[in-house]
Length: 117
Picture (cartoon, rainbow, N blue to C red):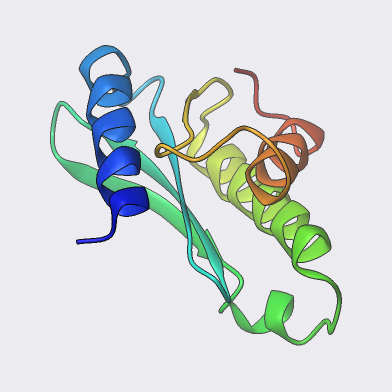
């Protein structure tokens, strides 16, 4: 494995030791690949994914825009799905990535959509 991947895994494990989601306050987990970004609302007590959004969703991928702008739309989409479930507060899990760029754009989009964390 690449040294960068191993480093991210260690950071991820340390974050997951302290960050855990419940049904009332799920974990907003973010995964970033080179091309896309994915966000999930996870209830760790039951091991269930409550909602998910990504740049592969038809309404987001149809908008040809920069990746940071699309990440913001993913944040807004996950916030809308959370509101439909009656969730207002979440725990943010950056997944070992730096809180900057596309990860920050997802968080800002979720906040604009009405989520608190």
